[in-house]
Length: 592
Image (cartoon, rainbow, N blue to C red; front, side):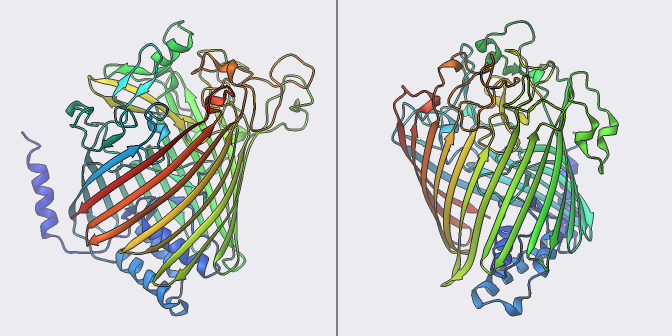
């Protein structure tokens, strides 16, 4: 009972506080404010603003200050003013906000598209039935945020025989909704793993510190980014950023469950045994250290025409909970610690250029593994480490049109077969062994007190062994309506997040050969598929999406999304017939 008075004390303090703008308010990655600012930069022929988010109000204001509103056309000037007003409006010390949403989901194929990963409008896109947010802004230098939600769990069951995560909300029936208490759902399906955004932040002019749970993203990609991508539900992280007119430095650390928490404890090294280990009880003792540590330097060159970013990170792992404090050096070149048994390093380069107004060209390159002078060269020498690179090239446009803003883009991505994958204990992986991979597990709670570990890439969401082409176009009028379309092609080889790492051999030698993406055969074993050897073809995925939204009244929004999906050679098996699905998602939301 001694804690009951604390919330009331906060409310009383907030009610009596003066209204003020807060420079340390953290805006989420999907905030329209950053999106509009980036469009204004492209329209002015400037390189993109910082692509390392999320962003504080102070940083967004500094981005906006680069734009001279007197040079803008009337439409762009109106967008500019709307962003400026939002960033500089006064806030109460304590604010509660509420949003309620009602959504329905329909699709045509209830046989082949029955998992969350089969949906374009998936768990991350679906809104909760009710969301309550609490913001605390006691002065201009301190900010706090937390969100409470009523929504169904991502998974509702677990098959102990196959290790498959199952959900009642993603395709088992033609029609579904976010009303989780209506059959086939049940009240016990309430997701109690929230909040997914909960943090404190503090800072000043030109710097910010954020500690807690939030999404992260580094890079300008539309389909994803190589180092950090926002498809991961959240990071439990600490983040420091410092920025001036032309430079920005970021340091991020994020912590995840150690793989030994969701791999077998004993010698049950069958694939069903490995997958069954992904389910645990709340009483499981959590030990082992698994962390992401990365730093990033961004610069603007040639009179704001060129943006350059260099990022480096490691995934650091210790079964004994040991943290070598030497790796926390914010200025170190992490690769040069030479601690391969404990860490996997990744280097990324980004460049974007706006040659003319309304056009920005960008690219990313990620380096995970390559042979240095004197080391065995893949494809030429025996027992070589497979090279692991990723490449991205894209173009974006944004321009005023009628009373709104038109935007569009093209993007090409290629990832090597062993990108993000690395052995752990040995020079190669055996079945049941985990690697030091750029893969993290999110602990998910579902009814009955069970915990499951949902593994996903920290970087590019489609992982290694893929070629992606994407085209998109959109039109929006802020606060009124928007319409967007997207075409997505992906050729994905046989490698996935559970592919076991191994040496590669030159032609004519026994063992896994060195082959480019996308692969047509899975040569090593797989921690999720005992039938890996049957993978004999490239899976081809096509998605066509249309979506739109309309603001009926202030705070009352409607939105709809239609996705057509076609997959040839599903599961990378040529004898599997092609599958298709039409998915329709409709929603109404009201915020106050």
